[in-house]
Structure formats: structure tokens, C-alpha cells
Figure 1: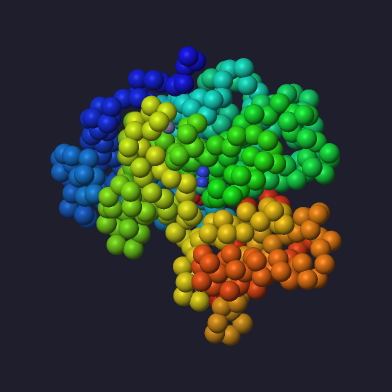
Figure 2: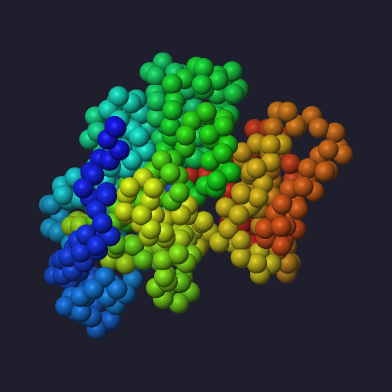
Length: 438
Ligand code: ADP
Ligand code: ZN
């Protein structure tokens, strides 16, 4: 049987072995932070904790949280824990307001990142023989280069196309025989749409087999659409600049959650309101601690990403815990007329309708006291010629689907095919105009 694992020993280690290794690394990482970072030393002092207090994995909950704000406040190098000469590469997150979040890597950090990306790609079936069309943005964003380094480690042929120039992307995908597509899920949908316009049938004209999609929340419905429209198998992959970039977790062929590489990251789920640790299996905010980072180690980072952790061994043989598809970011959660709603819930509710294209927008306004909640959905080439009665019925259907899930009754507007903005990177689906948010 072909080898399934990039690093069989560690990917299939028993829970006991993993826990033992994690505890050893956690103690080391905490000590390292305490000794090398004034930021962490101060945090520990304020919380009256010393490294010797950490004797079990559960003791991690004594360590104070680190937030995105801490990284912003200490921009650019305040949290770097090595002499700056040892930093060999710097990335930054796509944050559009305030100071960006900087990721600073030592040679060791770069090696681990490449290793974890190789492991992640391999788990989805990427091999040396593949041709990888990498349409994640190259540059400061960790997406492009993260995939690049991982693929290079496997020896896969990489097409570093980055984002943009969609027609040329399709031409190159065809001419170079790409077998793997890597990009955001929203860009995958855009590519699929552009292919249809050009009369390209993926299974006939292209060699694409699989795609690795991440960097933004996406729903099961969007997976179905991508799989049908591009005629490929779609894998979810997750990461964030604060930890390394992509390569923190990835789906295996079971498509039942994303394996978190626990030999490098300690995972906890917390109640986002109280900060209390939740038992595995309960939905909450993911909190990660890096176990092996040296440049910019992160203890108990609050991701604001909402998910559930499954700790049982997976059918694929890997023991590393799985995080279920991210439901959304806690700060993306909308409060509409007092109801908590994630954009992904709306997406799930309406993207199953074949009458609609894969684009939508959520618009929130507050002309006086009450929120006005509008969903703009886009018609397809086929449905744009529907009769007024059919359109009315479609609007009602969308409204009911959203109502079933949220209890809210949005105003539904139908846009013409191609009218809503397409994204080459992370999509912006929510336009919140309440209290001058925009
Ligand atoms: P930014 O915060 O500017 O988007 P990053 O590029 O580091 O910075 O993005 C990391 C974030 O992207 C994660 O915290 C998460 O919210 C989101 N993300 C990344 N991968 C996925 C995924 N597979 N599913 C859902 N969300 C994801
Ligand atoms: Zn698995």
C-alpha cells in the first residue's frame, strides 16, 4: 500500500506518547518564553505564575492568554524572543486597520513550518508527481509562501502563480497540467465561474484532482459547490500568521475535521466570554500554544475562531486531535436584532439552492432603532430569466431558509449574474453600516 503519512511515527503516535511529548515541550516553551521575553516575564509576574508551576498539560490554564492586541501593541518586534539577527524571514497578516500582526521566523521556525506544510499537503495526497497551482497570494501573507515551502519539501512541481489575472490562471492550469489547486474557497468559486464562461469543462480540459482551500471560513455547501463545479475533491486547511501561517491543521481523506499537529501546538477550547477551558467536544474559541517556536513563540493565543475538538483516533490512523470546520470568528459574529448570527450560518442556509450563484452579501443597517438585515443573493445565467412569480417564490424560499436557522426575516434582494464582487483572496461578505462601522 502506498505510504499515507509524511511522518508515520509522529502522525500515528499513541495519545500517551503525544501527551508525554507535549508536556515536555510545553515546559520547555514556557521556560524559554520566561527567560527570553520581557513581555512574557511581565505577564507571568502579573498573574503570579512561574514556569515551575506548569507540571501537567492541564496546568496550561494557569498561563495568561495572549491576544492579537498584545501582538499589535508590541509591533513590530516587542515579542520577538531571540536577538533580531537570528530572524531570517518576516510575514504579516492581512489586517487592514492599525498595526499589522508580524510573524518573525528563525531558521528553526522556517524548517518546522516547511515540515508541517509538507506533512499537511502529504495528508491530502499531494505527491512529488503532482503539479501544484498555488494561487494563494505571495508576499507578506503567509499563504503563498507557506504552501510553496511545503511543496518544495515534497518535491512537487510548484506553479507560483499567486492571485489575480484569472484568465491567465486558467490557461496556465490547462497548459501546465496542474493537478492540485491551492487558493481561498472564494477564489476557487470565482475560477469555476470563469471556466464556465470560457467553456472549459474541468474533467475534460484540465488534470485537476484536488484542491486545498482555507484562509477564510467556508461552509459544507461551498465545498459541495467547489467539488461539483471544479470536479475535484476539496480539502480544508487552516492556519494563522500568529502560529506560523498555513500548516497548523488539515483534513485527511476522511474529511471529518482537521488534524492539528499536536507535536508542535497545544490546543484548548475556551468559553469566549469567561475564558474557562471547555471539555473536548464542546464548541468554543480555539486557543493555541506553540510548543517549538523560537522567534516569536506564542502562549495561549486566543484565535477568536469558533470550533469543536474531537480527540478520538481518526479512521485514517492519525492520533492528532481534529478541529471541526471553523464556524466563524467570534468577532465576525453579527448581533442582528439581538440574535447572534455567523455569516457561515447564512451561507449554509442559502448556498444549497441551485437557483443561486455562489456569491452573496449580508448588509446590515440601522436607520433608526431597529436593525435592517438584507441579504443580496445572485441569480445564475439560467435563473436570471425567471418570471416575476418565480422570483417572488425564490425570495420567499431564501427568506424561509434563513428564518429556519436564525429566526430572523431578512429582506432578500436578487442581483444579476456577475453583479456581486468576486474575491481573489479572502472574501468580504458582510457590510455592516450600523453606528458608522463603515
Ligand atoms: P487575518 O487575521 O488578517 O485574516 P491570517 O491571514 O493570519 O490573518 O488569517 C488567519 C485566520 O484566517 C484564522 O484565524 C481564521 O479566522 C481564518 N482561517 C484560516 N484558515 C481557515 C479555514 N480553513 N477555515 C476557516 N477560517 C480559516
Ligand atoms: Zn484522519
